[in-house]
Length: 84
Image 1 (cartoon, rainbow, N blue to C red):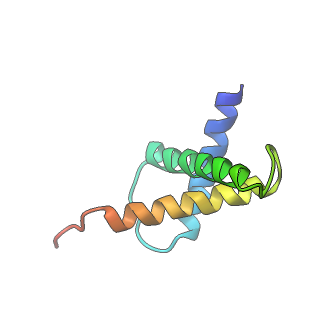
Image 2 (image 1 turned 45 degrees about the vertical axis):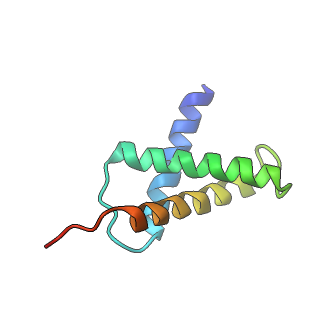
Image 3 (image 1 turned 180 degrees about the vertical axis):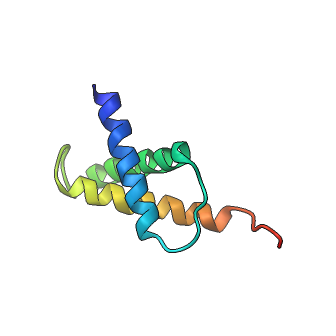
């Protein structure tokens, strides 16, 4: 059940992050979910290591969103530009 919950939350966080981050992020559902899950994991471990919040705290969802936006921004910067 935890895996399904993590995938669902990662997908929702990825969708919200893509909607909030400006720019054209053309990617599929799997990439969206992967960035959401990656942002959630990044925020979870960083936030708990720094003592900002505990496991299951409401602030962790917002931190997951920020983590996903950071990952999307890094991906947009490192992705090769298409020639037109």
